[in-house]
Image (cartoon, rainbow, N blue to C red; front, side, top):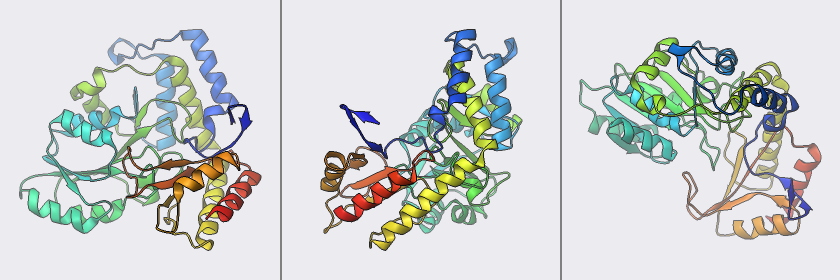
Length: 355
């Protein structure tokens, strides 16, 4: 990246597969914009726009579903899903560090929301025992991959807790899991081997999937419910045709070029194992987000400044202002399939010298 006239190794942002700058994705965006302009009409009863139909085909193929839904933003996913499910569940139980869209979406749907401790199945079980009546159906919501630490929700353990509750639904905001986790890049549920009735996820195209807009991989039945019941869905516009076409092409590349995901996985494994060899406590996760928490003998803010000013390496230092920031702040950085081995070398050498 060029910043202030200088070249930096960029380890911020979330272009995990590098699709945001893929030439075929950019070409699809330009061609659709020139052909269709900047407004996409999307009312199915009046005939779907060709770009939307193309996106649906690509999304259904990538996620292996038949009713993928495109949203104006990933943030809208919380409200769209919650309003569509409101008639099927009675009480929502939410990881306390979940993204704001989860909480906002439940408020829009009018569902009572009970927090449980972060990534803590026993806390979930205790909350269910205290707040769920015998005839009520629970909805459990959480991030799939948490956006600062890269930690993965123990959704399989949550499902073990939910097994005794008929009609239970487990739903993940998987913005940072799509394109990265699972054999086919379908996210946290695939990574944990969870599929079938009772499981649902949603996310954004703007992280691992190279474009913009929200995505809900689902069945035709749920898509119909969303279109009929969710005012949050009906009342918002789709992205422009160029963005939709870019997303369709990015999904196709992500599906047919698994080497991008493999390359990213190599970077993630190498960085995590090397940092552990330095004596740094690093989350054991295949997510593309790496987090070093503040510690008494570790000044994360000073390290971030040193990397930026002396090494020309851009990482993130934060003390708060976002969900999932460790107490005291942290140093966080993200990896991409586009990173060259030499960039990873420079990052690790600079961290070793600074830690």
